[in-house]
Length: 242
View 1 (cartoon, helix red, strand yellow):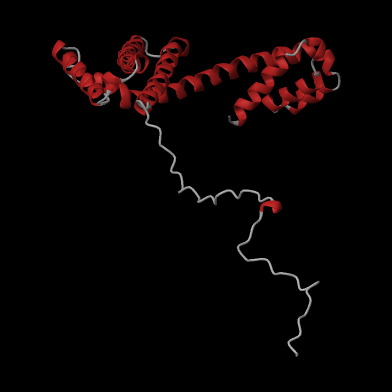
View 2 (cartoon, rainbow, N blue to C red):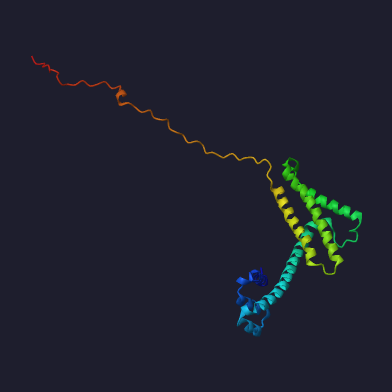
């Protein structure tokens, strides 16, 4: 938002403040910023509360003018958006400045072109999609029809009056912009819907070889194949002497 719009919001906030809570000195400064009249400011800044009605009345006039200008700028910005939408979306169904635009043949050709464009955007697996996803495709065709009707009414309104009032243009512009956002949202959902996604099986590494579990050994059960050695204690030695 530019500085002009910010200043208008500040001025509007000051005006919306209850009189008992208004900062009249701040109001005098706002009036100085709007007029640049230093002499007037010196006169009212001595006792701004005593000049409350004058300050409020002057600021109210400036606010009304600025709000009108701000609204006009907003409508012009919206018109620029709609002009782009017409080029990208509505134009296939409505050829501007065409000498045959009003003829039945031209209208039929435009509708055929529009239908062909939608047919090209239809998914190969459309019939397999859930009903709520298929409905988005059908709805978008209706949305473009509605946008075309609104644009035609807007053009007729502009031609009827040399200066089309912003209040008359605004509702048509707003609805076209809103419908365009809905159109793109529907296409995004329709185009990116994944039909019956196949889960990817995780790739497991080869199972590690687990050594066999050792059975605990009871020491009392341990046996050996080696023969026991006889003890030499208590054995009488036999002499071979005669």
